[in-house]
Length: 242
Image (cartoon, rainbow, N blue to C red):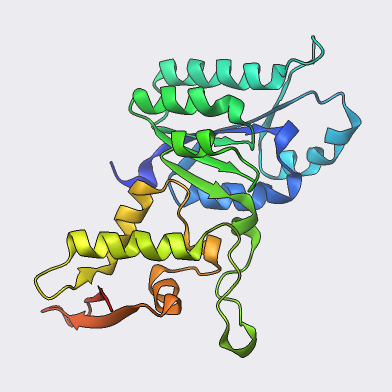
């Protein structure tokens, strides 16, 4: 299926997401498909959620009222999970975007993937690791709103939003070793695909870059060349371990 034709249900946990992220959330979803269902869950009688009214109208997001019937129990999580399963069995979507920093959605993400659905998770840096790895892809909300490739003082590399530079270098080196040709060159696109498969939360924006090539170049431990093809309009970026 063409990624741009993928129908995605966007389910947002209002208890764990700030309204300031909503535009960036929907912009990111549009990179992976079409948001055909947009719902947000919370107790809308609570004053702390009053600020959501304007963005819900602007972006046509349906608020789902869920009262907190029992102290200590998160009714919002239960309502979102029940709706997700109903949508799954309806067969009307190809994927889900679950927006929350709560680990309670870990099993839901795993179940949706077991059913063959694309699962995109979004949350803040505090999101527990089990929920992140249960998703096919995971995006940190802080990285979505931070401008990538911003000018840096004295040529310094951007400070990571969420990412260990040494861990990234080791991962890329290993992938290059596995996928390179006899001369040690690996295709940059193939390396990016492998990073996304091995690390659901890998995103060049976590490191302050919008593209993989400038990120890899900033690490200063790889050789990078551009190889021309028979088509004068198509070139390939290759990298090699130094």
